[in-house]
Image 1 (cartoon, rainbow, N blue to C red):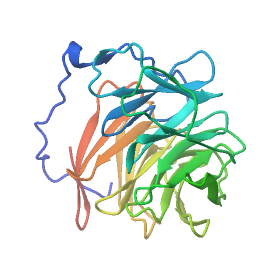
Image 2 (cartoon, helix red, strand yellow):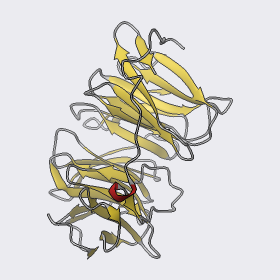
Image 3 (cartoon, rainbow, N blue to C red):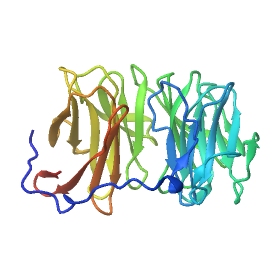
Image 4 (cartoon, rainbow, N blue to C red):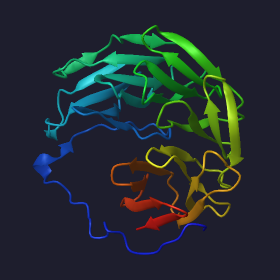
Amino acid sequence: MSGKFVRASKYRHVFGTEFKIDQQYSGTKMTKSAWDSNMIACGCKHFSMIWDVAGGGAFAVIPYTKVGKQVDVCLVSGHKGTVLDIDYNPFNDNLIASVSEDCNICIWNIPEDCPSGNIHEAAQTLQGHKRKVGTCNFNPCASNVLATSSADTTIKIWDIEQGEEMFSIGGFTDIINSVAWNRVGSELVSTCKDKKIRIIDPRQQTVASDVLAHQGSKGMRCLWMQNNEMIFTTGFSRNAEREMAFWDPRNLATPLCRHTVDNQSGVLMPFYDPDSSILYLGGKGDSGISYFEIVHEKTILLFS
């Protein structure tokens, strides 16, 4: 790997502590869908979880203050197919986007008190994808802009206020795994089942650059590290080892750093806190969450 470990992290003595049982959220019904998404999204006042229901698709909205066994939850259930991804609007914590196997994108306005029972009527329904829609991501700088990706191998950019498609980007050869905006919302990065990452200019509706990122055939994830303008990806090596890599968006020819994580089989889900420069990695079936302190100077320094 081109990055290096030079010292123990200043966070090396930080350990997660499980809340007491009366402060946990028990009785939740997480979806059993095999689609590779985070399943949970968090806002400032409440979090949402894709819910397991008998027919159609739904997600639950749970206030942080409502701890304990979850009964009579606020259930948003307007999709005809399984919900695959959800995201909070960064400018309005009551506005949530959801995408589904029914090919639709729905925008929901959640009441302030998160009433128990079902919410069926979406504030806006966006239609245009021809196959199931797998990801949704609000623009970090424009409150009305949403990006979605679909199994029809396109990424679409929507104006959710007008309910209109603004741009459509093609050029993908397989299913898109994940999408992320850069800090100013001017470009997107995506990972695809064809093992490539792509930087996309949505206004030009073109792929600005791409590269074969990870040799393994399993799923990949990406995020744009907001405080240092790096792209981070997780994937698998040719030998089925989980690995992570850092990329300079101005030059994708070679990664800034590539690091083998372990031999587990679950897709690694990355979460990054730009305020503390801490990167968290967790995967389905893992018994723990790894964290790394990231310092980007002349080289990438990983402190674990």
